[in-house]
Image (cartoon, rainbow, N blue to C red; front, side):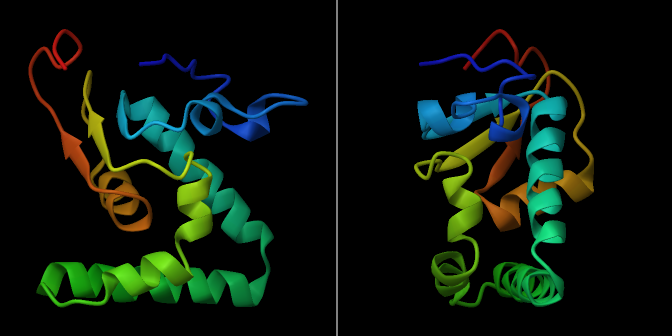
Length: 131
C-alpha cells in the first residue's frame, strides 16, 4: 500500500526521479477525480508531442478499442499490446483496475481512462472511508 501526492504523481512533476505512480507500480489505484484528470492530461500531452502519425495511430486505436469493448467483440487485447502498452507503462505497468471516489468524475475522463489504461469504477457515498 502506498500514497502518492497529487503534485508528485507523474514523472513530469518531479525532477531526477520517477513519479509516485511509476515508482509504486500499483495493481489497484484508488483516487479522486483530480488524480484521473492529471493522468489523462499527461497522456494527452505525450500523444500531442508525438507528431501527426503518433496522434492518428493513438486516436484510431482508441476509437477501435471503444467500438470493440462496447460491441463485446474480441481484439481489444491486441490493441493494448501494440498501442497502449506505453500508456500502461506510465502508470507502472501492473495496474489492473482503478476506482474513483470523493467526487464525481466526468464521463469523458472515465471513458478515456477505461479505454486507454484499465477499467475505472466510480464509487459513490463515503468511498474515502472504505476500500
